[in-house]
Image (cartoon, rainbow, N blue to C red):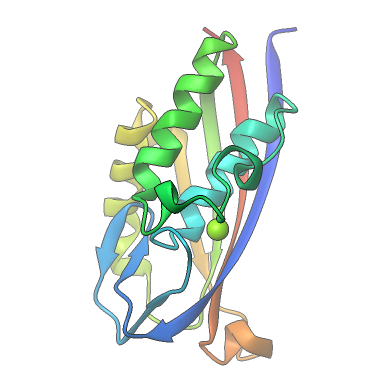
Length: 159
Ligand code: MG
C-alpha cells in the first residue's frame, strides 16, 4: 500500500486566564484553550489524524491526560513525537487539510504563521499544509465564543 488516510477532530473550551495557543503559535486573545496540555486543538487534531491513518489509536492513548508528564505540555513536542512514531512505522505525511471552527478571535491574520509552524514541526512543505478558518455562524458553544473545534485530514505516504 502506498498511501494511508486519517481523520482527526478536537474541541477545547475557551476560558479566561489561559494563553491562546493554536497551530503551534500564540495568538493574542482575552481567552485561551483549556486543557491538560497547552490545549492546542489544531495540533491535537492533526496528531489524531496521523495516528488514525495507521490505526494506532488516538493521542489520549499515547499521551494520557492523567499523566503529570503532559501537564501544560507543548503540543508541538507531542506532534513531533507522533511524527517520529509514524516514521518508525515507515510513513510520513504527504499533505494535510484542516478546518478550524472559531467565532473568536479572527484567525485569518494568523493562518500563514500556523501553516509555517505546522510544516516545520512535521518537516513538510508549507504548500502541503492547508489550514482553513471559519466561524459557526453564531450557533452553539463555538458560535458563542466558548470553544474552538478543529477537523483534520492527513494523507500519509511511504518514507
Ligand atoms: Mg485536545
